[in-house]
Length: 169
Image 1 (spheres, rainbow, N blue to C red):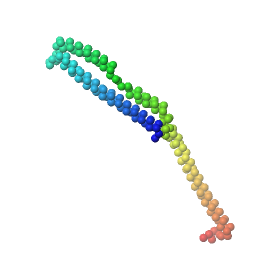
Image 2: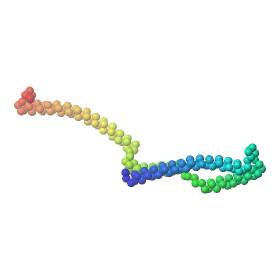
Image 3: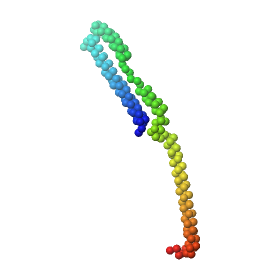
Image 4: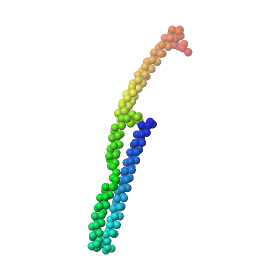
């Protein structure tokens, strides 16, 4: 494995790790936001002065309006400070673009086969197998013809040496 191949593998592994990190951040953040909002709602109701019989006092109504303003101010402050992760779609899009741009190079470096390479090999294999069948058929014909000629030559040679075909042994 060459250094370029190792680098490409490390880039892909890094991209996967980054995607997992952002996914975990989004799922973790979503669950924490839900818990925090429900806790803040309960806390605000307790601090607003709700009586045990679920009726609000006039003081509680004033506190509620003041608290809602404070909550909205706090949410506006948090909106500016909360770091929203980049979309995983854009990151995966960048990875796809990189692979599209570098695909020819990766195929060459990793000696990968493409669909066209495989189809070309299949065509060559089919042609070679047909040629082998044809060559085998022709060889068998030639072998039969050659054996007959060898037998004829042996007979003539035997006659020339003065032996007959029956004196061969």
